[in-house]
Image (cartoon, rainbow, N blue to C red; front, top):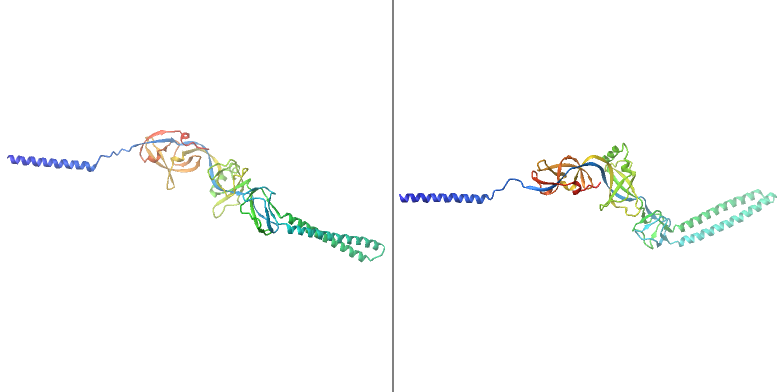
Length: 387
């Protein structure tokens, strides 16, 4: 009886130990229990800005010289003098090069001598004409002789004119050995060197580009062109033609306003765009041909436009998203359609209303459905919009 009770006690203790081991093992394997409640994320938010906003469009343009003149000599010869260096600013009429003029001086002397000779011959013949006319009046010579001398005098007078023209041409050729700039501008660095032989009318000695004012050439699409026509009642509006701004490649704004001067006759069939040239004054020679810049044109004032800071937008695969704070302070990811950039802001075309609140700081920490601890800020305190 005592043995039987001992066995029962033994097996009871053994069963209890096994159950205790299983409970401990289950606790170790399962680990601590993870709370399924999402943590609260601290963010800063602002209300979508609603205000009347001037909308502008930007076009990529390139600075071009209004006049780009290739300097060529009217006479042939070797360059014996250079008055400028490549890259210098030059003025209309300023001497640039001199060509060896010795042969042209010789031609002048020869032409002058030929003119003197022909004038002497003409003078002698004219005296003979007077003499024979007097004799003919006294019937001393035949009228035929007088007529022959008159014809000879006329022929020699023509020879004098030919000689005079040859002298003038020789003088002009000698003057043309001094090459001057035809326009105000800047000379390129690819100019000829001393001793270089230039052929008349074919050798390009240098290129001078005018730099004040300059053109900025840009293109706009057919759709953009039609949009401007609608705003201008059938023609480009004055705000476009008379008030073009320029933003340089480093982001700085050019201080002077430009105006449209030329528009192409039609749409390019290859690119579907129309080419426009705008004129900008360049008194400091700041703009150089070949520079790239953005032409900013005012389109219209958008009434009640919706604006949000650029930093509030996340772009994924060409789609734009913002985090909207719901009425119960939860995060809602929402896709939006963006329009133009207005300073540091985006113009919102679709997806938001003027009463929505959007996250502007802490956006990378937020996930869909997160509870938010929101601090509201004013738009100008976060991302002031430059008009």
